[in-house]
Amino acid sequence: MVEVASPSPIVTMSRKDHLSRTFEAYRAEIDSDNERRERLIILSRSITQLSKKLIFHLHRGATSSPGARAKMLNDARTKEREIREQFRKVNEVLREDGDDQGWRWHRQVSPGLEEYIESLSFLHYLEGKGLITLSDVQAALSDQETGDPWLVVTPEDYVLGISDLTGELMRYATNALSTGDHETPLSVCRFVRDVKAKFDRIPPFLIKPLAKKQEETTRSLEKIERVCYALRLRLLEFADRPEILRQMAKRALDEADREEID
Amino acid sequence: MSITAVKDQRRSVEEALTQAITSLEAEQSLKKTIREAVDPLDDVARSALSELNLLHSIPSSGHAALCEKCLATVATSKSHWTTVASLIPKGEFYRYQFAIGPTLRSFVTAIAMAHFLLKDELIPVFAISSLLGIGEGEIILSAEDYLQGVIGMVNELPRLSINAVTTQNFFLPIKISAFVNDIFASYSLLNLRNDALRRRFDSLKYDVKRCEDVVYDLTLRGLTPAPTSA
Image (tube, rainbow over the protein chains, first blue to last red):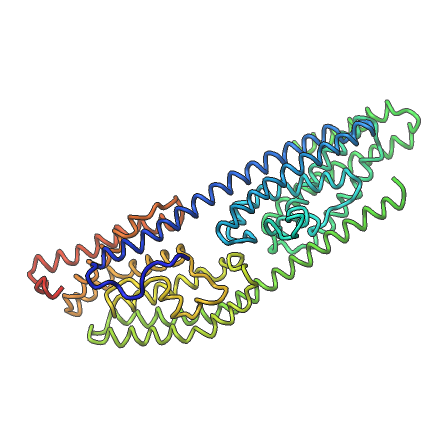
């Protein structure tokens, strides 16, 4: 809070003049808060956009040949660093306010943050490292030299971001199928199942928006499970004929989609 | 996928989510502790506001004593504020503001009302902070909470103005009307967004009008004291 007025009003000044002076200070404070809020919302949007692009990029290359896939992951890291750069800018704005940890403006930044966690965790998964931890995410969003966080990543942000990851994994499993890869759907299925099981233990009042996202996760998981079911049956029957496998898998997925629409 | 890889993947999920859930629970328990520490403060704020309710019924000669009593009640909150402040980790006030802000606003309303009746002026932020003893700690009385709390006081004034007339105090309505006018002019200086503060500000103009109406009724009947005494 800015220092607003001297404790004893100047006698010659009318109350109205005195109040005006005080309120001009509030105006300055409110104006600069509003301006800061706007800048953070813009940064958050830009982080969201860049994260979405990164996710598309990951989907495009995730099912390519090993060589192309490695190059894609490499490029993805470059893109991911660009997003971090945006977070560094967020930190600059926060510091102007003396709010180094970003609590005051967390709500303005968290939409971008969640999207970033979704993309980062997807990248982490595709790199074969399993599920990224909250402290890994926090480390990514901290000054690499001093270790000071650019903004605090709350467990809520993390859980909501990971919740969205399951949707991306469903898509990934589906895409993998169309290339005849039957290993990926089975492995993604196990992973998403484990995540959902853990999430189901979180009391709903701890994270309000989670309940809705959990429904989405459950739907994604059911789709993957349906695909895996068909896949397993066909593997038993036509193990040596990948072409037929592909067809079957596609049909299973279409059925799952249709049922969802009904 | 090899069996080891499957196990690794499993473990990574288990570890990552256990970590997140643990910190979620820790955060939740601190929020609960803070909310519970704020409860006695809400009690104090309610007592202070309830004491001020008497302003509407007692003769104005008793106003000053009542306001002093209200400020004394407010002062009893200091130790509770110290407790709350000590629970907030350094620099994390805004993380818990949701639990503390509404209480702060009630205090601002009560204090500003008592201060106006005693001194005929709007109490500044720093004076409120020092009355509550929150100047040094982690608790911040933000402009938003202060400005909202002050509007809470103004919303009470038209009623006080009307009731003053009933108890035949014809001076207070004039004092109130002038004060509310000054405050309205001051809030008009702010560039407000379309948020809660803006909506509350919009309510001020009705208070201005209601206060002016009372003065008008008095003037019409020649009941206003001589301008010099106002």
